[in-house]
Amino acid sequence: MSNASGGLNEAFKAGELVLVKDHINLMPEHPLRGNHDERMGIRFPDMSNAYDKDLRAMVIEKSEILGIDLKQGVYVGFQGPSLETPAEYKFLHTIGADMTGMSTVPEVIVANHAGVKVICFSIVTNICYPPEVVTETTLEEVIETAEAAVVPLKKIVSSILLQLV
Image 1 (cartoon, rainbow, N blue to C red):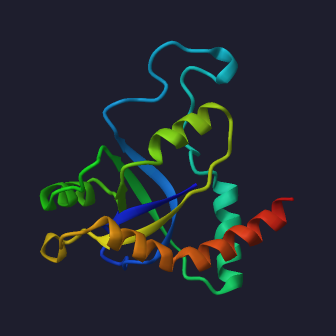
Image 2: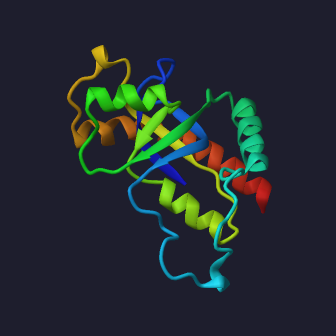
């Protein structure tokens, strides 16, 4: 998986690629709530390895071999479609999030429910912490910044796919 995110870790810069190692779910709905079909997976899946540790180790090794600076971090899923306020960014940083976005968490939950191993890359598209550095962000700026990380992302993914085949 991949996503675009706002950077909450002061060590992250816009345009950087980050390997998601865990997430915090602040989405108001849960994708497994409601009627359950046992054929799709167990009712209460364990999420302690939501972002597969073996795949992450492989990604880290490949990125080092390729000379790609790959950070790691915790992603927080926050309902959109508006971007967060400076106070919300501060709160998300305080609870341990390194990046924030409006996707990924429900998809990762469902994938784990179905027994699918997950790896996720997040492209930091704008800096959201500390509050003093927050500036207005447009969708066009997010897309432009995300495009800068496509080349290293393709290199890592291509390398991993060759190893997995």
